[in-house]
Image (tube, rainbow, N blue to C red; front, side, top):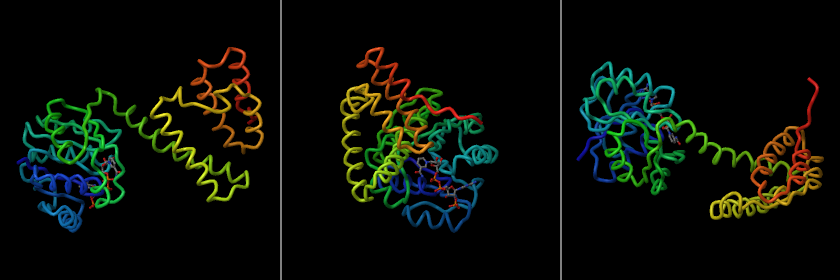
Length: 289
Ligand SMILES: NC(=O)c1ccc[n+]([C@@H]2O[C@H](COP(=O)([O-])OP(=O)(O)OC[C@H]3O[C@@H](n4cnc5c(N)ncnc54)[C@H](OP(=O)(O)O)[C@@H]3O)[C@@H](O)[C@H]2O)c1
């Protein structure tokens, strides 16, 4: 059985440790937080592990997870490397979405196999997260020597690992942020514009929710080009102008930026004249400073 040490038992650290413990394939070794009481509470939640006051006092382990906030990963790695507590040949990994394994460089220099394992999942609350984690995709990046161990770990906790190309972390995380965060921003924009139409909140929620769900299913099943419908896909510059006439300035800027990207997506179905008319209809308003 492999031993797993946890440094940073917050939302993600506690959840992954609990899942690893539950798998029966890992022994939870030490658990380190910024304070001993926090580490004790984390061990109680995990149902295993030794609360540990500092990284200098870590016992030996096959795997060490640095689940501290992104901004603390490099300094904790430097502290760990200086303490010499991680054995060469063992695996250290962090869970940042955008940070690369290079954040652990001082440990790599000491012969530790360093990688990142990012679960594409929102760990809002550990007990709830542990219930819903199964099937989560986990992105692996870093030292390929760590991958077999981390693939096994991902499978053991119910995840589905996949490898990222070197240098791919920033684009990977940007893609996730666009897919997740910007979808929420679009919902907010649509809801505000619906309120301008005088729609009651519950009516707008039902109408927009139904349409957003259906459109998401369509684009996932058919691909963006085939799923696209609406005035821009039909080359209807007149409808675009009527929309813009009722939008507030900030909303109009977003409408135009997204509209131009939508027109590019629809370009194959539109003749050159229609594309030019759409491009003119989607010109942002220029303001004198
Ligand atoms: N939350 C998510 O949805 C999510 C999703 C994917 C990836 N991640 C990644 O997971 C990592 C952890 O995020 P999180 O949301 O779990 O953070 P979190 O809930 O804020 O937990 C951070 C933990 O790190 C501990 N900590 C902070 N500085 C430390 C230090 N210098 N030494 C030792 N322990 C320290 C904290 O200790 P105390 O308990 O004593 O405060 C806390 O237990 C990040 O890299 C994040 O990008 C998070």
